[in-house]
Length: 539
Image 1: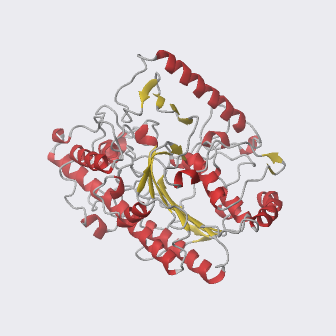
Image 2: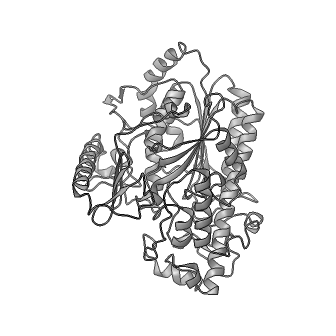
Image 3: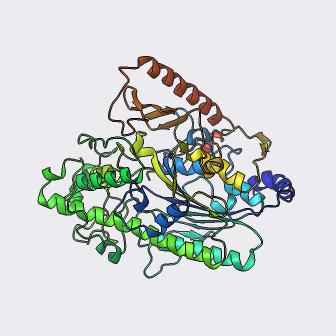
């Protein structure tokens, strides 16, 4: 038994004894995460992309309109699975502390899968991991872990339960992950029907490289010929009709490009690529054709995710688990403005979206996919941190098709799962006290007219900083603080810092105080110097 499991063993006995007093059947849990998907990329959030399965979950459940991630993949996953801000568990960078995309968590920062396993849940992981440690050492009974994230048509060095995944014909990452999730569910129904399950399904799409089955891409041929300005406006109008947003659509920032500059990649991608969201009418015909083709592939990737989720939902129905399974669906960060070429490189002669191509969404389409917000993945303006959240649980959520508009965050997922599982975290892990976590359960928000309230929400990624208190948001991108009234301007178009200097001072002090508290946590249980984190992950 691993040291972490030994540290949780006694807790598991206590948890199981406590469960007998509750009586009510605990729900199964299905947590689904996409990678680099924009806020408006689902039909139920205003998109033109076909997502009927997720739209049905939204119609039968809830959509959150002000739900947040951490702006980056690895920090979001650490936050989502522990309930702490990523910097507190050293899974995002703090100066002078071994931390970042390859940081090592303090031993008290156990994953929710460990608590659920100790409480009698069978736990299954499928897809992206991007947390320190191996899934099966952190509470999961079964795992399919993707390790080739630079090509969606090859399993590469992927592993299933620690064993290499052999080459397969007609492999596509999203399909492979859904296949594994379905396999685990079938085994669960056959062998563990008397236990609840926790399934964690993590797609690596629609993250670059933009690659999708040709038939899916063909569905969106010429859909985006009118360009990103028209697409953004149409999505905004649908979102307004759906009641998702109530502020003006901010203009695209034509002077803001990718967060990192790779001139060699631009050369390889050719004259059709452009690294600024200039008005579509200013693009050359070659650029328009190239860009429209890229968005067709992105749409196909989102479409395919929905198709694969539909297969998982059918399995839940077939095993009689659909009604009492809490399903949560979200994205790890906003759509990405990045432009680069990695992995096997890019063949300019290859069809867009094929295995031989390596395309990225870029800032024009990223701006449109993040409609109606500003900026992109890695920034902590709303475009980088806003995610859809769909919550579906017929046996536990009476509301159908409603919106939840109060702000919430990935820090809230762990307390939510623990509450519905009718269990708690231990006070000590490995003889280390478990610090209070900042999140709050969303279960009260599942009730009709329910809400979740936070004193504040906090962000830091690279040199991007933000704090939200009520409807005030203070945010900075490698420069002076900006201040926005999100009640009237969630598009962050009107900086009020000059009009309210005292509010800026007040919120900046709160941000600094929260940062100091997080830094104190990150300094606990530091690994030996030999185990200091290598440079952060590039994905």
